[in-house]
Length: 107
Image (cartoon, rainbow, N blue to C red):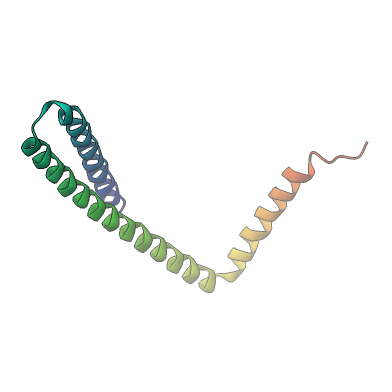
């Protein structure tokens, strides 16, 4: 799952870079090129932007699904071993209390 997520992230970043390059190309050529070339570049940028949005949407769903799976597994573990969960929470609270209370020493 992690490799798939990383691959999707890399593909999305590549697509975003491509869209930005096309936007830059459109900007640079808008003053130089005729209206036909500018229209073709604009259409190409819009297509790539739509593709990037679609990939971003897919990546978002992947992240949400992964988070839901992690939450479900955590919930299962807490129900299977509640004393471990309470112990971990108590230790975390103790450590946090010591760290925060360490600066408030009496003089």
